[in-house]
Length: 157
Ligand SMILES: [Zn+2]
Ligand SMILES: [Zn+2]
Image (cartoon, helix red, strand yellow):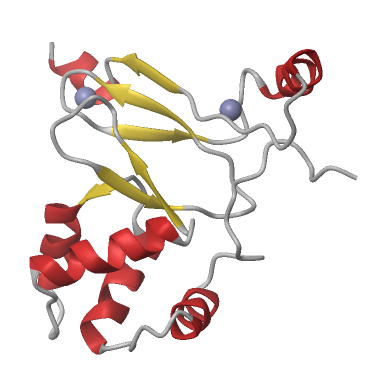
């Protein structure tokens, strides 16, 4: 049996703080207050965040990680396939956590850069199987980026 189509490559069964912490511990990472802060910040984020934004959001708390810590944690999460980079043709990378139950297609506002996650409306889901069959690939995944002008920016103009 091949794994179900349309899933993220995350090794986690579900995306919770406990599950991530357990996995990081297995990798030998010491879970400090500021590292926990980064994870909490990523878990509540409603859109992909840049490294600067992650650090900024963590500063409001009593323990604030430095830039190097944010960089290290996010790169480890990416390596472990718990997070992914959303590149969006920009100079800096945006990160988001990968929920194994969620699928990731985005709409990007070309005016303000806002990134909206498309929920339950993947336009190509049904083609994945066809493509996999035609080209002989297994475990096919994809991530789409649509570009447009968001409701706020449309209102402003
Ligand atoms: Zn916008
Ligand atoms: Zn999709």
